Image (cartoon, rainbow, N blue to C red):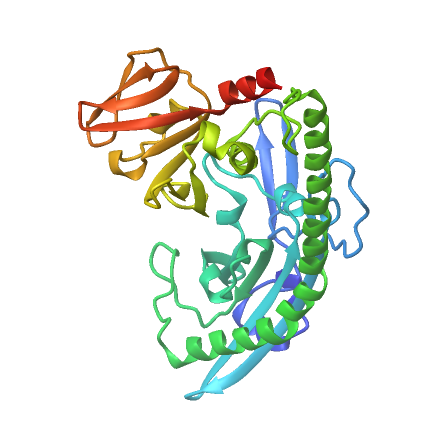
Length: 360
């Protein structure tokens, strides 16, 4: 980053060797080798029109996108003091960020990237909060100023409340809002948004294909004379089947129940009306044991609709309040009993379907 601002004569008064990128020399005595590596801060190379990467399913282009911003140089005089800052950086995809990172154990790219404040073009601290951006980790920006005064451990600023630093942050905001974010939104984030839409559409198509394949293997309801042809495999299908059966067989199998209101968001699925015009609570469960697994309170159901009863006769289960219900049968009808005071009828749709088919 430092050589990008070498043309500004003022910088030579504050930073030595502005034209020279720092280098690090490694002497490997074990292997008798010497190696020279660049000591400057790495940025991904520009790639504003990346090709489709077949290895990337969700973001095949944006993951390899990289656009550079800057160099930006601003200066002024405040209280007779010369104040300046330098800003440079990128917006880039995850592959670009990963390629220039050597993460420590437990460290993530999200914690590594954002905005770094620098002095002598050496990072001090990551202040991604100054970006005011939820997607800060897609940015890789360095804000350098010789006016920054750092704490002894070089991990923070000690003069952040000064007029000089406030001016730097205000000017930084202007550059980000006027010259960085608009371009990032029109390029990188637009590509990502388009990719997300395409990915979601493709996932919906895949899910529908899977559903159609599964449908072909689902068992039929045989000769049952209602306009539903497959056995249910979930609670929502059970609700649809129950409604269809109720329209033709309410008197014979369901005690003349009528549906008042259905909700899959409420504690109880159905509010129904019985033959005496009383409101009753009806719980739909694919298997009757789910009543207890899902923790339904004792007072939230008067009837249970299930595809099948999967408990043993005389088996007992407890509600969340600790009340014990016992599964029994009365004249070939399943019921849950709570002592002598409450009887909860269970309508097992599977056996009702069998009875309808046998009568046809």
